[in-house]
Length: 174
Image 1 (cartoon, one colour):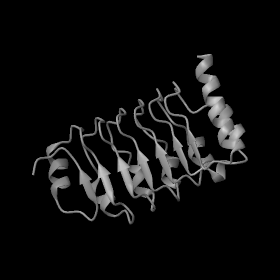
Image 2 (tube, rainbow, N blue to C red):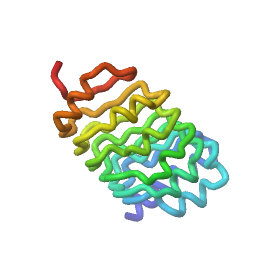
Image 3 (cartoon, rainbow, N blue to C red):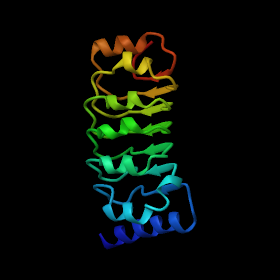
Image 4 (cartoon, rainbow, N blue to C red):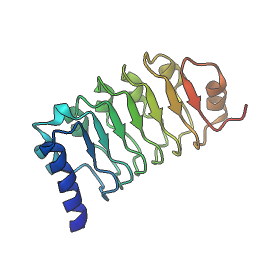
């Protein structure tokens, strides 16, 4: 555990000291975003555009995360055990890509549809049965949606097969 904490501290300090625009805390055995990191990054949070929290053991991500990193462009959360996102994710004004693959979502996180800049959504390998195609179709920037390896219901499969203005990767057969 001490090694994991030291690893997180090293990566956070490097981000601050080197003025990086990305923070990589992947594969750090995190179960949540550490509160102490918010304090350390407070002065540079506006400069961080990419955060990778992939391959951890995160069960939740707090509203504070999204209200702190308001300039985020890309968020990598694949390989965790997330089941939902806080409503504050819908307030991300600059987010263009979110990777939620291989988590435990059973419901499509509909707040994502409120993000006007979002271009890419990856939800591969979750447990989602329904997709809000009407809301997704209304998203101005959406270009790509990956819903492979989800147990989509028949109605959702039909909706996915209809033509859309964005690319959909799914396990449906042509």
